[in-house]
Length: 569
Image (cartoon, rainbow, N blue to C red; front, top):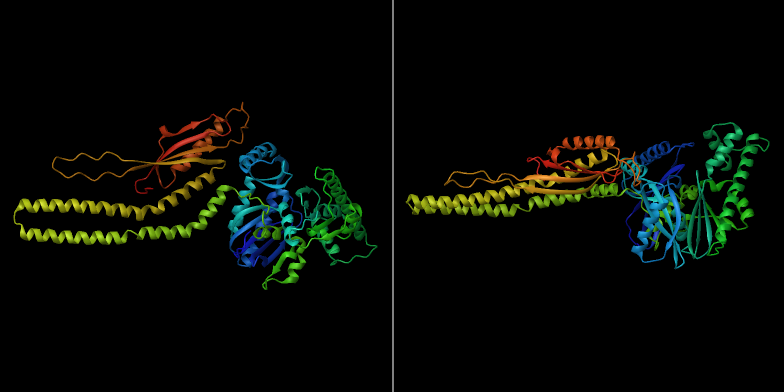
């Protein structure tokens, strides 16, 4: 359990809003330092349209409030593929292997095209119930890169459906009571069953947008106008006479929505009670913006025959003096997910996954360490200076000794021998100086080379590096005439061997698949041409370009880069 006071920033990319929260822990208590929220335009249907609006809103909030640093990003359930499965309760390493195998069989995409994670949510000692979450790698990468471009550095991409349970654990002090948390969002409703036997998370494709669409159809107005009418009426901002046809449409559709949601929850409760654990919830806890719908609590209580209350995620949170309590209270129904993510700072065995692409996480971590690496490089570059000063002093002493010998020894042969010795010493010193100069000048080349190589990989999508090897070959020294001192050794030839894989989307993973030679040849040519334009690459010999097509959908390409002598690694 963490007692760290380091602040944590949580970005919640909701289906209908974007919020940014900042928390820290003080004396074991979670403290909310900042909270801002802005609604998204209604009627965003496509992923691209929604993500563009969400990132635009996030960028505005970051600039307006001068926010920076690392952040956890919560993604909504409608972007996620979730699957519940059961695996044997065995040792952790073996269980992880079983989960990975089941993920390959249960996620309807190649694992190379998704970022996935798992969370054990219940166990009876014989079997463990595991919840799988998968996010398309393309969407995950876009979210990470665009959040980074907005001014925050994402370290975790979290699945929203897991977080209501953490908010309840925090607010109830890990109460053993059996409850059902119903988070009624814009597009989906998440049901979290909590109790001593563990938890279970399910999603229903019912949300506030369902009711908005019904109102739009009933009034003949646009989705945007129907959303404004719905929110205004049920929040009390818009007053309509009882005889107004719009009021009748709103009320009848709200009642139909509440009945439909109550029936869906009841069906799931029946299945839960008939399960092996025989779970029996004691009450329903409502959250999510659509939970403020008039008559919803009463309809759920009547249909489910259980008390229905509003979940207060702020029950276990202290508000700092920087936060307006009235502003936060107005959005408490939209705070369960940010509070649930922040609660991981204080809860033991907190639930969560990380759906950020590993390569982007590594790149962001590397970018964060760049200032430290630059400082270390400077220290390393300066460290030879005392040695250089000592060598220069030794050289001066040697020269003084030579002068003294010249004064004492008049014989040419003796002077020649002494000068020869001095020359050898000077060559040794020059060699040391050259090595130190190389250390000072070439330390930054690796960083620049890897950045350029990463650009080529990102530009050639569905291509990655499996192996990178560096060899340094010493050419033979040129011949010299007899009696002449040996010539300096020529510079080493540096070669970088890359072993890469290319995913061919046009070829399936079946055993009898046939490689798309034309597509592979085109991508190989584009990749090699891009590498030849690299400022560090002198040449890529055609004779050292080899391909392995044993896996038709994942062919391997091996090639050797000869590094320029003026840009050594």
